[in-house]
Image (cartoon, rainbow, N blue to C red; front, side):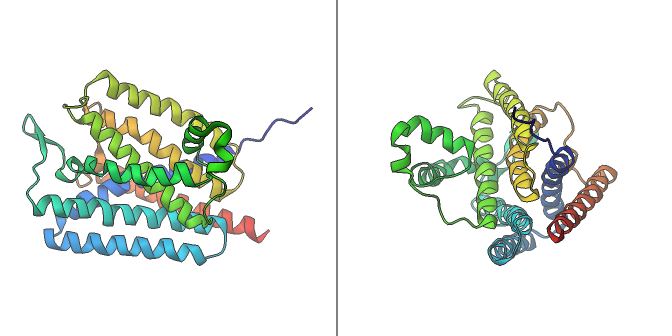
Length: 289
């Protein structure tokens, strides 16, 4: 009789929290840059941030070790997205006078996010490449390939792309972030759905339930690299209902006002650094053995 598969609780919780803490910290960093820096300096800093992220990702192609490459893809991808996607959208939104969405005198959607749905065609272009031209380990893409191609799947998607772990992690992070932002922006738009619509809440509920199943799958991954990569998808899907609940003022998003909530944000930062050092040390120790 086949033995019961082992669950790696410690590794999975550490990976999940490591990625989860990057969400509020990333938001807080953007807010502080916007409020404490000159607008011109913000955009120079944002462009430099994206460049540093890009260099980290490319460096990850050449470093040794699955965990190191995964971390290069994760942190390089976060800096890339923040600097070369979000801050560039912000720059052009401000430059050409895009107005924020204001409800009852409060800004509920910043200008850069209002123009993000215009990238839907670009998102479809990239997804077409993945669905029709690539074997991949992504369950979402595999589901579409299975149902679109059936028995012809092995002929249409005959082989995978060249696998560099840093690039795979980088693309996974950016594609899931992009997908999440598009879904949220279309849901928030009152011309399509609306942020208080049952459809929007169903999206959040579906993502919450989905993240539980993803976490269960993550529990079975023994290696740090694979576990962290699965945590990226799990956390972003889990963060979707967090964004929706924050949008409807169900709770206070402390990462939007980090200067008011210094204690909790510093605690998150310290916990993140401890986890990062712990994960790095454990992975290094395991590799040495």
